[in-house]
Amino acid sequence: MSNEYDIVSAFQKIEQELIQSMKRNLSRHIKEEQKENFNWTMWQAEQLKSLKEFRNNNPKLFKKYFSTINEDIEDVLKKAYESGKSQTEIEILENLKIGKSKNIKSSFFKVNDRKLKALIKEAQKGLNEARVSILRFTNDKYRKIIFNAQVYANTGAGTIQQTVDMATKDFLNTGINSIEYSNGNRVNIVSYVEMAIRTATKRAYLQGEGIKRDEWGIHTVIVHNRGGGCPFCSRYQGKVFIDDVWSSGTKEESKKMGYPLLSTAIAGGLFHPNCKDVATTYFPGMNSELNPPTKKEFEIKKQNYIKDQKLKLIDRNIEKYKRLRVGSLDKENIEKYRRKQLEWQEYKKRFKKNSNISFKDIQSSNDLSIPDLLERTIKEQNQVLNEKAKEFIDKNIKSNDIKEDKALKVPFAYNKLIDKIVINSNHEDIGYYNIDESIIHEVVHMKDIRNKITENNFEKLDTMMLKAKLYIDNNYNYFYKYLQKNSNNMSLCDIMSALSGGKMYGDFGHFPKYWKNDNIVLNELSANLISSSIVGNEAVENLLDEIPPLKNLKEECLKLWQV
Image (cartoon, rainbow, N blue to C red):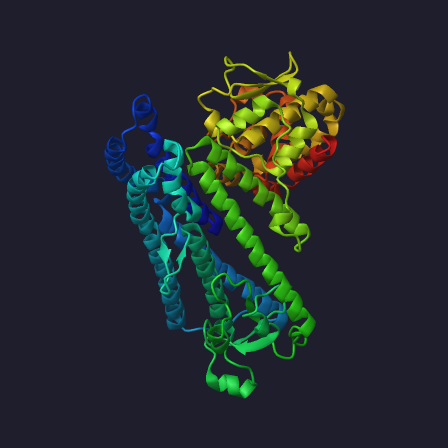
């Protein structure tokens, strides 16, 4: 892990894996018991045994994701701290046109070093406490679910699976909300970690800025009037303060210069958790004149804030129905939650374009017109197509374009000889595949062969591909490390394997001899770049920002394949 996202992602994966583990345990003895009269007492006894196994296995799972969490937090905060220092020095040098900072006593650096270490220690303590709370919370919830299941069964609520789903529903609605604030409110573990690491990173950055201003004896800062801002912070935008929090500003300096102390603004709500405002160095007489928000701008910021909060609510509902879909046993419930998840995803898409639309205005748009075989495979694997993937698949394949072959050695493939996409829905590895990304990948191959896209545009595509290969060759170690951090991302592994001629590989990829032919390299690159773009593969998108020729290749492919 090397950034905020990686740390948050680790907690997201933990929540998903614990829910899936709980589901496996809860369903383990149902099939056997259904052959005879179901015995709830026996089921409970078996589940209590499973609970012990669940507790024993969880530390192994934690080690997988959290073995380096203290080092990761320290690394992220130190990077933010150094970034704040370097950015501020650039600003100061540009404004003052001087070559070096003032001489500072070594004791000054020791004080600020202690501040940074205290911040790192506080962040590590907070996230480690959050990590420990997950175990305690899930164990308690699991035990409660086991006993609630029989309570619901005694009411004659429905099938065994439906009864267990009723017992797990409250837990799946909220997820692992193991963090409790002093006012009694609980928050989901992922939301808490996201807030905590973002807040700590910002404080580290501000500390870095503050120490660099102190080196120059400058304590004035300005909170810029940006496009957004919440009601708590907008009132401080466009104003200058004396920094007595991260720099050594004083009350005397505040009185002399006529600017309030930054600590008073912070006490009033500025820089609250998840705050997006920042304070940068202000040079009296050199910066442009101050521009606090006008009354009209305040109203616009208020509306933008309300829209942003609604988007967060939509995201929480998408995650809620995803948890319910993944954690439920009953097929009807799984399908119900799958459709709900799609409805909220569609609502988010439309809300971004028109914030006046309500959820009630959304008609369920998830009646898949895609071939029955593919729809069945999606449901069996408990996955959901996003809207872009569904639209692309609907547009490009018909029912006779797909064929099932239980002898196929991989889950999905395009067979050029019969001109069909072949699926082995029983393949032992199919659970590792993102079905939408995999099917789009094969559709791209099919369109390529049918329309001779690579063949007719080879020279242009090959030039872009060769330039991208040079980026890999010239920065091999850097990109290899990036691949290892994302080694379970199938599309990224394939792209890196292709560009390195098979020298780089993660959990997926091809041997070097596969990449000898440039036509094959382009075939695979186009399929991976297009499928990643449609499903929003973040690891691939980040890679494209690092390799401009590869990004150009993706844009050209999207155009040629008419995506």
